[in-house]
Image (cartoon, rainbow, N blue to C red; front, top):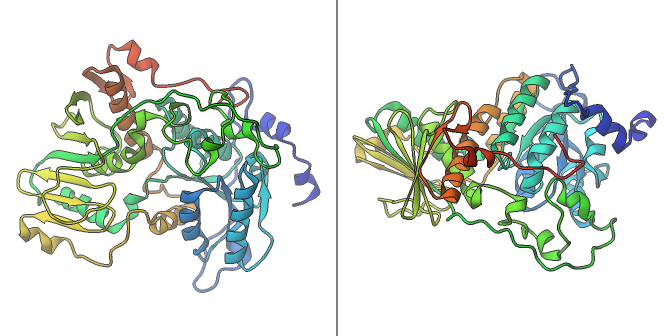
Length: 434
């Protein structure tokens, strides 16, 4: 870091990238890396990576990224000192060096001109805000899901990436896993006949607005509680929030009445199977143990509670199973990599290969880095992300208000339902206003 860079304050950074008028300041340059050539990649041609938020999922994704020969992680950031230390140790070990920088404030990481792309793996409440500020700072973004916790955030991500010319990959990595790809290809091939029903496994919805008992805050050098909360409403510190994923399930810290946990993945795959990446369901209705979402083309998407689908095979599909049913056959698959089809004649269309778990992010990360170099759109670009997330969020709203409702997926708004439309956004705590 040069002297000019080291003197960049958080306040100066915020003034540069978030004006009170709402103006967007986007650097008019592309990342430093150029197309690599075969063999070893010169340091000057490597993509400089920064990491914002270090937890269990980040460790999995980052491990994949550190294995890419044309990528070098330069810095990590987390508001918890212990996580910064573990992230640095992981990166330094893989880099064979000790020069990975650490930050407690992600704006300092974003101010570095040598960082071309960032992995954002914070808690859900931070994903959209961190992505937008990263884009305004001239970085490309790989964001863990849910990428936004309401429709307004998802729309703003799409707008910002377009305005700033950034490459953005939503972290619904199953789009890059072979068995899910093959299931979708089978649906697209017409060999199932006309699609009738799509099944997505989700958690049973609930909303938790409770607060844990107040405890003394740890020293700021150990944990910056105010920064940890970020745009979420203020609440007193309790160690259980920051232990592992202890915050998960609290509505202030996430969204979608818990549907987004698996739904961000499984509904995304169903959207893809139905060729609905630029659209979504137009009607939502509650049924026992599920939410029914109907598309304009007549296909019905079932969001099945209890993390299951009405499976026909005896295979162990694992987590995040999906099922596509047509007039002439069906296919089902999940995170174990197993694929079941009917009729048996469809087996010849699968071209089975090596199984990869649905949690593996290697192919998804590679797609992102390839697009950082080519400037092409990744498989889960902002538009794909927005419509898949909106399908989940609209379903959650139907559940929350306990009524049937119609939805315009292009405008992302409910038809003649002001109460439902008010739930498409939520206030952010100052100064985290976008």
